[in-house]
Image (tube, rainbow, N blue to C red; front, side):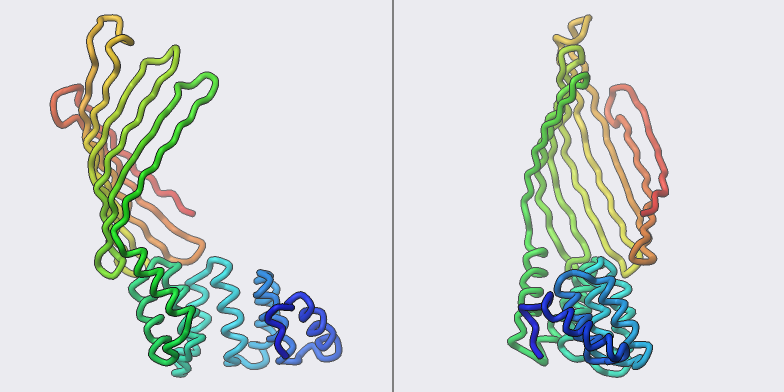
Length: 282
């Protein structure tokens, strides 16, 4: 029975069947797939778990549950769910495609590409795998980004922000670095007007499923307008700022970041240094 465009109509039909036999495998899988299609993923997992309690290696139930977990933003749980299918050599295109999506979402485009190509090796016309490879290819192309923001509140200075960067991706999508330039202006009636110009670079590298490194280095020129100073002199300060983040990602809901941030005056000016270490988890 095909319910591809009538999922909401299919659900009560499957529910009626299950009222007579709560262990009807086909009805549980059918309702689970329909619930997935209308984004009721938690309910999908309930039906899938009932099937898997009866048939632990039911391929359709495993895929149904894995699709729900991936849609819930749980790529590691998705891959763990699919593991029995891989260990039993059941590497069918549908299974490989779910794994490819999960790998990309957990920051491993290199492995996602491998799974997508494995899908196309078995099913050359698979549109989902083709689109995924195109998307991965687009993400690896050099990109220029320009960002502009303006903010102002009643008693605070207005803040204008403009940043341009050119991001380059190498190492099968695992390494990114981006030269960048930035301009910020703080301006308000009772506040001194301050301009800050910055140039530098930032980069990120994903080592494996668990570790990621990110760093940025900026040379800044901070300039306070002469008209705002009682002595009539212009105040300029050159600083070098460096921030490094080392991340541990042990599971889907947990991420731990160790951040070290430093700002120093490398040439003249008032030398100062700021070191901070934080351990936020999310």
